[in-house]
Length: 197
Image (cartoon, rainbow, N blue to C red; front, top):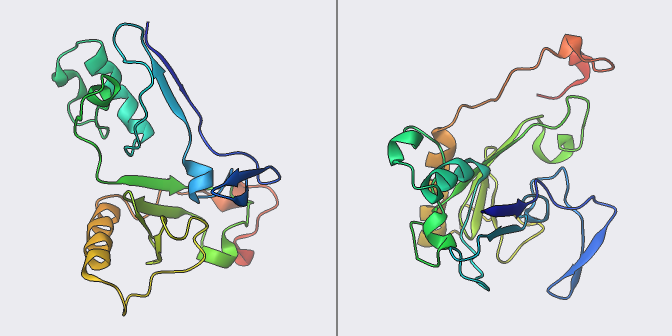
């Protein structure tokens, strides 16, 4: 039996954890790594080798094709699926790791936590193993700046940073600009004239 354990977000912001000698507050409800980078443990005795650790990027859309492949079903069962199977990595093989993941966050319509930083309600981003690009153009080096405090300067960017920005912008461009439209007039306590969009 295949058992998969994961989380959907980081811990609540009132909780603090130590990471590389620093105290980090929880990131639940935010798009920082400590809000979106969650554990994933897969166990299947006799099929998944014990003690493996893998740092590949994985999105929740990857679960369906992975389970289809683990079950031995033909790939036609996942035609046009957004996800990529990470079953080879579970078995200890290299597989075909993702180059990027896409994130979309839409807090409850009455939540204003992103107003100051993003000046809009919906937050979209694409990231690779090092860089994260938001749809407002802000790029962060998440290896050097896990708390996303310093936007990477466009003018002083290296060719590697420029390539990452171009790749991640292409990912953002491949998805709709906005998610499901909310009829704000039906949300109690929220007045459209007070919202920044």
